[in-house]
Length: 202
Figure: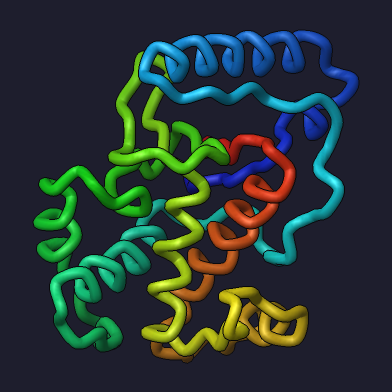
C-alpha cells in the first residue's frame, strides 16, 4: 500500500458516474466545513490547464516521512543530513514539530485528506479529513529544496530541466526518497495553486 496524490480527481474517474458523484459530494462537504472555518473554496469544473511533471504519482507511506524530517530539521535550525543507508528513519524531529500544529507538510495525514489553494494559518482537522493549504505547502517545499539539492529559480520556480533531473535521480542518491516525495508534492501543489483544484491524498 502507498500514498497516491491527485489533482483534479474527478477527471480521473471520468465515465464512472458513481465515482464522480462521490467526489463531488466530498468536495461539497469539504467546502461547507471550510466555510464554517472562514476559508472560502470550491472545486472548479473541468481539468487544470497544465499537468504536473512528477513521473511517479504515488509512493510508499514511509517516503513522505523522509521529506517531513528534512523540513523539521530545517525548522529547528539543525543541519540536514541524509539518513545513513541501513539505518531506520528517526521520526523524532517530525514528531516534535507536529506538536506545534503549524506546518502544512508535517501536520497532515499521510494516507488521506486534502490541500486546497487558499492561504490560511494552521492546518485544519475537519470531519472531511486533514486539510492543509497548498499555498503554504508550496512555500514549505521551497524551503526544503536547497537542503536536498533541488535548484529553484530566484522566483522559486522549478524549470523543466531541473524537474527532469529530480525525476531521474539514481537509486543510490542519498536523498532519493526525499526527492521522490518532494517533486510529487511540489508539482501537485503548484498545479493546485495555478488551477484552483484540490490536492487529494488517497
